[in-house]
Length: 219
Image 1: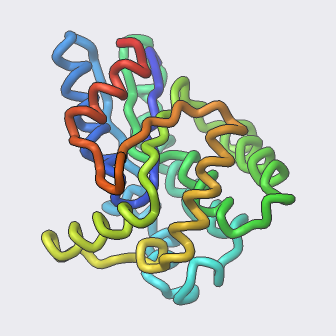
Image 2 (image 1 turned 90 degrees about the horizontal axis):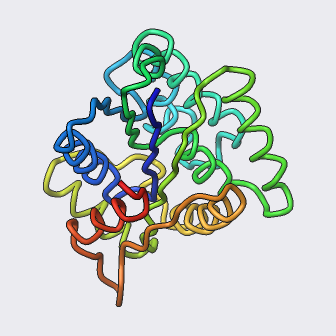
């Protein structure tokens, strides 16, 4: 694999938009690319994830502990890797860009734990997904830093415009706030590149965020 780039952030932060803009930019430079998005909602591999996010296992994120929920998302990634994108990872000329990855567990599931348990959880998560399961570790992680209040507004606006159902992560205001704090902790602990995506209580333009991403990656 030529390079594995992950874009993550709170719900509503523009991950999909920025990942696809990056794909277009890379292809414009003549590079071979592969776009990934997790969870793989169209695949049976995501059944446990869908059950969890729809509230079948509990109406609140904390009803399923951080380790159990992490395994649901990791299982989805593992199956998709083995049945689909492993070939792209073995291609030295392909740049893989993922919208969410193991990093999402390091944000959303870490948020369920006290800070005193954060390092132990991150150590377990990295060992479980990258060593035990053998998933590829990303070369670059870009975290789109959007404050929870703006994220919440964008989530609700997207739902109104598209009719998309708000899941138990998105619907829980306290969970968003805790996930934001967890993301700052994880990004510092794991050396992610944080991209500031808002200013003065408003989101920055899509193009400005895109330019920040290009600059951060040096491409």
